[in-house]
Length: 149
Image (cartoon, rainbow, N blue to C red; front, side):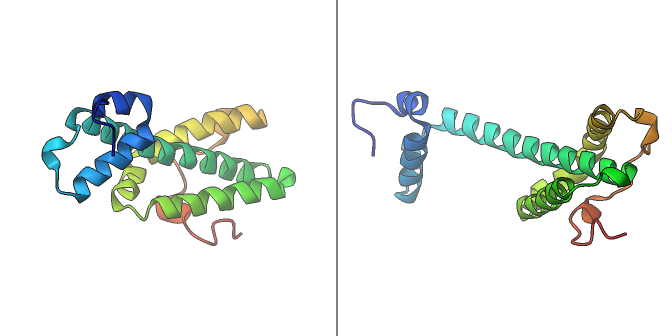
């Protein structure tokens, strides 16, 4: 627990982990009146934003590598395969949260657009080489046979 002289607001600014531990203790003890609600709201909002950003980022990386995989067959590498598998597995883990799984459906078009730009830059291929609309669904991105021909 924090020292009596240090407020929760000060603790939040100086040591976020200690603040989180203190908040968890207060909740466990049923001391809801002592919670730092202002910072708790800020922290939870920021955490949700970070989680959503991670979904979009991982989807973008996965889609970019899939585009390169499908459009540059002679340049395929074990590194690309590993990245595709890793990102797909990480997304599957993240999607244990149904809310984040639903978010993935919402951001798939944005992630795909970003992936096309990156794949175009990496490959030197014009962006219009790639399909205008994402050829993969979120379910396909999570499939173990994603790279099956």
